[in-house]
Amino acid sequence: MSDLAPGLTAGRPRQIIAAARTLLEEEGAEALTMRRLADRVGVKAPTLYKHFPDKSSVVTALAGEMLRETAGVLEAAERDHPGSFVGLATAYRAHALAHPHLYLLTMGSAVLPVGAAAAAAAPLFRAAGGDEGRARAAWAFAHGMVVLELNGRFLPGTDLAAAWEAGIAAFAVRGLEGAG
Image (cartoon, rainbow, N blue to C red):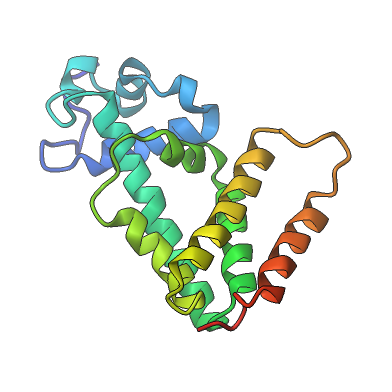
């Protein structure tokens, strides 16, 4: 194993994050160790520390990536369905379920990149017409359902799509839908 894999320089930690993401998405959070990451990148473990001081900095970078992607997904949903909580919630759930390990990683990250969470939440706040209470309640519903679903906390046979739709409908009835 070389000290640096071909094409990997101190100016390109993006390769490390891409490898970390692949490892995380393929094998889960338990597999994301600096040693496993170094193997995946093709470098010796100490080389990673030239780019990231510790595993938590890699986790922070991954969480930031997920939040930026979530913001992009929600911005697109907002463009396609202006002011629609249904559109936002559907896009949020689909993105989270498509990237379960990455999504759950953002929930446990003590340090998130500055502004990343706010950017991801902005479309929801706009859909709620600026009503922070409604936006927070809607986010709590969407986040709670997704986390419970990803962690297998519903009884076997539960119709998750129906539960999701009932929750969305409740927010629409309460005035979130079209509040903007």
